[in-house]
Length: 622
Image (cartoon, rainbow, N blue to C red; front, side, top):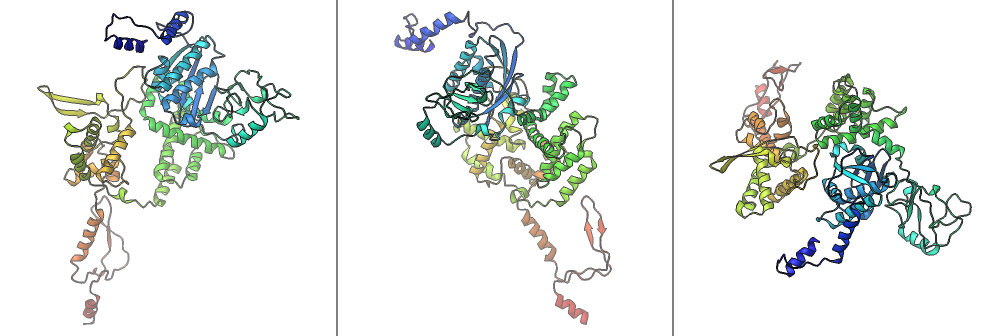
């Protein structure tokens, strides 16, 4: 109707008094509103009164597949090759459609609440459409058709991704390639279809590998005609059918007449174990048993960032699988230092830093399940393991780990390619601001600068003119519950900021071995080389003075080998005479952190360095 109005105004030179003729499609829309808004569950003019849902569903999508979780079923599926090319918003919205299809028959005329962690899918499903994407619009209309067909009342809510544990795990379960998901090459199927077809039903298939539009699936599938081919009626022989029942003596063909079996939603035993062993699920269950509310749990989870939770989830799953492979099978939830030590030993080939991350992930669960037990890090066996690992680990650092690059390279690039500011495009100006912020603040490019929001920036003004700016490092609000709002702007991901910085560094001529995070090392090192004290740099870059992180990982002055060469040359430069140690003098070493020398020799020393041995020999003869 809006498009028709715009067209009419254009034809009548914006005369609002001129008649506007409605198109056939507009008239059909008006008839639909007239016939169904009062008798069907379409979009209500007013929001319906809130009531407790009869069913709560959690949905999530990933690059691998989709997952739907409710008290009725926990089911997952994989994407087709075509669906893998679509955006994550399309896949998230399609997962909501699958969830409704799987539950609609049993919950006809009921109230359903759906949780998703995707804001775009939430907006399109709530408003039953949008204008930004035709593909999302089609899915939203299809969702509304399902709702209308089964007279459902559906409400949509947002859930933070780190709390959407079960659906997220389901969407990421990798296929174990069971027999019922095996498929035949397309050429073979075409030959069979020509000789025995036309075939009408794929008896053992899933939506991602079916060869026909109509198929029976092994377990619940949103597009399957029925579930479990062995539960269906197999006729003796029907012309134009598919492949016969493998358990019938006389092979027959599958007819198009089927029994619409109610979907039986199941999760494989292995999948169920994977859900139950989730790092966050265990912690959440413990908190719930302790009487901690969901709202408080959400707040507790903010103690760690999303990426930390995600990494810990993966490590805990690996530890759980290791425990299940042992003979006898071990319980990963039991506080058992021997199990942890055995797990670390099996992965002993990994670096000490990686293994310490493994220990931290396991300890994060043990600290909640067994609060009265001492920490893993304080256990003597764990302490000895990491000490031995550190002493036996030989890591030859690469050049980029020994010394950083000169920050002047990037500064010259900014002056040459990103100046003056008044001629830059918005994207170039944005990049320039990001680079200058990284250089001036010495903050982490992704974790700190990449997450700055408008609330973290405060300008000070003099006579209405800004003359300085305050930047605040804040914990990102990535775990906060979001409301469905139409936002005028959106923030870029921290990883995107890192890619921008990496690209700018490469264009400036920085070696590709150095990543975006090395910009922090380059700025800190430059400041110390120009005379700033280490404590001043720590204060400016938001480091603790009690930590040695800067000295250990970030202070990497360039051309270290040249300084070492000069020191070596200075040692030998004045060796004009024979350099010897006096008899009965003891060799010494300088200990780190002390100003005294320590005796280490036990025997009397002899001449050690003699630059002109022939003179020494002559002297002894004389």
